Image (cartoon, rainbow, N blue to C red; front, side, top):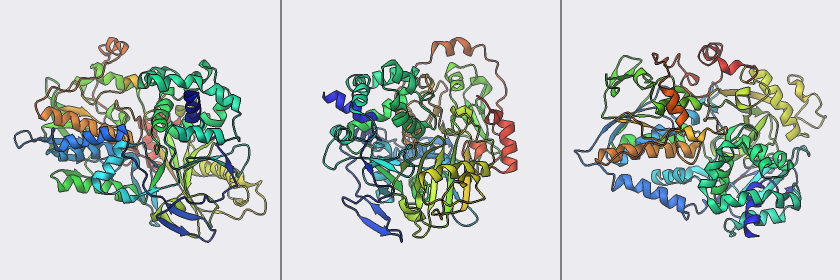
Length: 613
């Protein structure tokens, strides 16, 4: 009965006691509290105990190894050129300076962070590439915060998950974790108390397929990569209603796609972590914009300890010798970068455009063809008054939206006692992501109108009938909140698409090219495409370089699939196309699309504008 209960709990997170619509949750304990004129309170909860898990201790030991067993002496010190200043490139450089090396990060743009980058608009408001949440089950990220002494920059929220109830507009249901109850029993207790969404029979029917995950662990999880979430559900006889009640929300939050397109390995990986760590699902917001509050401390640490971070330095080409080894990196400026070691921390879609001709028939690089970033849209919407939201992340369970948060009450830097600013993830947004409509190709106004219709459902008594937005035409007279300003950030190639069968193609950090290492959240590591995965990917790349500098044998290259090996030699090498244009989207980030950037996107990635996949 223990395993059945726990397995039920892992997948029934939204299946918990409902609370009155938009009612603030009373705190158990708090460090700070700021109330606005609607009575909603911003609450920071104490940092949970994140350190008492095997995962945290294991990755803490890896961090420590850079300062001890992997520490270079003067004769072992290497100059390392790292391409890309996202989280993975910065993490790689951070751990390399810890190990006594001299890395230089070359970032193409004028802002750090990659897919967590942000910038200010003409009003001084921060625009973020995505809505980023920090989980307790992010051991490498939490180690990094401790090592940089910036834990106080995380605003921990009540240990709870909040879901909109699709069939009851304006109402939500919560999944509450009771303090003092350890994992996995905190899941089980929440499930037993809930009577709102799934019946007891449905919960029991859901449990048996998940028992192997608890018994066999990662081997069972990895073996499910060939199945979508929906295929797994039907293969093992799970109730169909769990797809609507649970899996849609989970899939869109994890990878911006619906469950019939998402690999079951992604869901099981997340659940395995959350199920085994008491505070794994507790969430935190950063207290301000990511470049200042996260990337700058990483940059400062790198530069203080002998490294360097160079902005506005796009790589034009990776130049090779006759034997395929790296000769130098050629910048667009014409400068040649020569180093002892080279690391790519570029997104997979950008790497594919940069692979030198002499590498193109190698199976290691041909497997990249099986991986691509998934489109997503991030929205910022400023209203003329306060909405009665909650101080937390909300899972919308909407056909168009994934998750959202009122940043005016969740984040100190964006706090506003008089008006709400919602940040929302619009997904799936394209046939490339399994959607029925290509929203990437639509105008900002069309996207915002569709979103306003969804917000009218989420806030039925608050959103006004505004003639500027036809989707609000059915709103009643009580609704008063009008949209004052908005920004639409399109990310044509976000995290790699974790569709079934892709995990086996994610490459090891070790490559077949001497002195060349691969970083990034899309490389082989168990935390998938995420901030945690990016930090871990960079950390593992640093381990490869530091280990090699000590004279140790390289870590093995991950096994490459036979069909890739068999077809690689038939590939006809060609001059790498490189990156065209400037700006965030050209280098794999997100931006508000101007006419010029849209034209460039149509030329470089025309599939973004297909109306059907």
